[in-house]
Image (cartoon, rainbow, N blue to C red; front, top):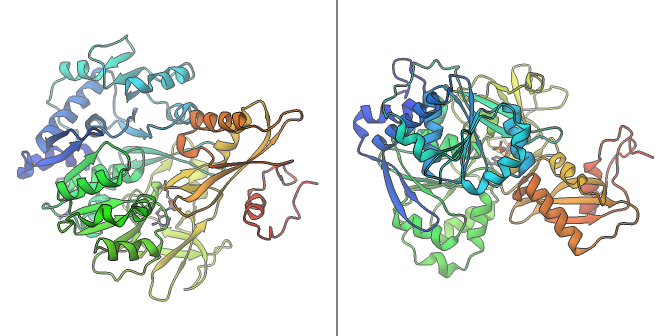
Length: 540
Ligand code: AMP
């Protein structure tokens, strides 16, 4: 049965009021576990009431349908109320990772023309620094002050106190814009991937058919809401089905994670390869004593899941791990392993029903089994993005002959399973986060000692890829431990802590082609001790 009733596609409504109307008002929508292990339960009635209040808050602040609002928070209950409240009002909601630095924030809020952002006191400094360059930004709402600080810096608590809890989402057609996530490319600024409320159809379908969620499950998705997995499968998919979620505000901690799994009797767990690899490295004594008998399935997304992790989980936890593949632009799972389909360790699985995948050569030829090429999807699935905000040209370039080009390369075997090969661009995937080498190079160039920079992703056993930077220093400048720390800190403050290079290598020059483009392929080949291939376009 579809979650869309009487043509109402509004995600905010479907995830809250609709669940109450179905008799689940008193059911726990989520158990909030803070980083300090405090626990609080919120019912679907609470979720409905608080998100409605927030919709009224935005309305009071002058927001109307199509305006853009952002969350810039670590995992927190307010994040869910604000996100769903904005959607109820048909306001577009963007989400930012809380570890983003100044440039990352500026690029995204600036491109989107965001009118307001909800954040915490401790992040205010970052926003204040970039505020003069954000003429559209009218309000900063802080979740941890009791009273308004100024006409622009407002208290969430005070706003919510004044707002009515009555709000009914307008009838929302499928194409109404909904969620905005920025994704990094290998050149230029990050692109705003815009989704529409219709995405809920695919997100709920996959939550049911791939994640196997039912109303009896206790579900834990570890993804941050700054990432598409955190919104598609940490908010929309599960709540559109009335599923109880665990939301844990702390970071990775093996013991605490196993405590959560056991104590909360988690039945379905969605995580990522880096975290699973970290668990695999822990002493077996740590997880051996836990009772995970309630846990039905484990899923993974974001980077390739190596077969060793699957083998480990089978032996150590007695569970399979189902790898799933999707990306910000697809809005939901497209290719996956799932219950009922035999797992091929190392493979991403098979395309879901209704999803047509193809491997296509650069010249447009559709390739057969066993041949590596561009991973493409026949366009038209329900959670497909609607555009790159302010960038229709690049959006158009992603489609050819009815196929969407994902930017990944892959191969299909004779049984129809897809195997990830790599990216067709220079984007770095570190612990599931896509990092633009261009953004890191630009940040490094802001340091006066740096004359040239080139950044690549190199294989890493834990993170899948690590960020490696090559820098050429200006004459007279010398390399030192202090300079290295300075460069690292600068990238962290400008881009994000995740983009911070793991290794910085000083070189005499950074190879560029005749048109001045950094030859990252050459840098990578040199780093790996491989043959660089054709370098005929190299600058002399
Ligand atoms: P994002 O848009 O940030 O979610 O990143 C999407 C990208 O992450 C994909 O295009 C892939 O390159 C990578 N990715 C996601 N899931 C998988 C997976 N299961 N196996 C291999 N790579 C993946």
